[in-house]
Amino acid sequence: MITHKDWFGEDYLRVYPHRNTEEAKHQIDFVQKILPLKKSDKILDLGCGNGRHANALAERGFTINCLDLSMILLRLARKNQSDDSRLNFIRADMRNMPFCSVFDKVLSFFTTFGYFESSAENLRTLLSIEQSLRPGGIFLQDYVNKSYVVNNVVPRDERDEAGFRIIQERNYNRDAERIEKKITIYSDGETREYFESVRLYTLQEMEALLAKTDLVLERTYGDFDGQPFSEKSPRLILIGKRRSTH
Image (tube, rainbow, N blue to C red):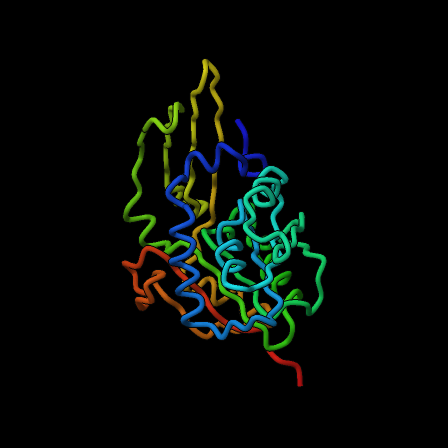
């Protein structure tokens, strides 16, 4: 069975076809509405995937640095880029990004946080974001809402997608506080299995992790329509700043 380290490739995009360009444009509309984005900003798209959010920003005149660990997704992002003068691609582990006080904004969409096995490793991601931001720089983290996920787990579903048979089996591991998913894909007589596991942090637990960094949480939202965060929100969108030095 293939774990998340090898999962983020073309099969990943087949499983999530609804995470498309139109969704990305809607989410960037929201970001532009609530954040003071400037064309001169140095922006990092953390966990950029196939570049849909970066492209939406580039089409609006922003220059974006696109970071991901998956070479497959970075190649697809490069192939899909709408403006090759506005996108820069970096392959790196988000726990150890090679930047120091570089970015004005760090944006992360569609749950890039929580895949690592320990809270110490997940904390390293936040510390790496802190290090990458200049003092006063802004971060946006689009994360899952634990209570919503736990209360809406679909144990199993299957569907056909462009000639592929896709089966997803989900489980809430209460002991580990993780949502676990087995994805099985059948195509042309072949079977491929993948395993996703994401640590579910409550807002209070995220606040506790952030308190161990110089990242200051300022606002939360429950979706990309700007609704306030609540126990029933589909998402937990965290927005804050790196503490300014004095």
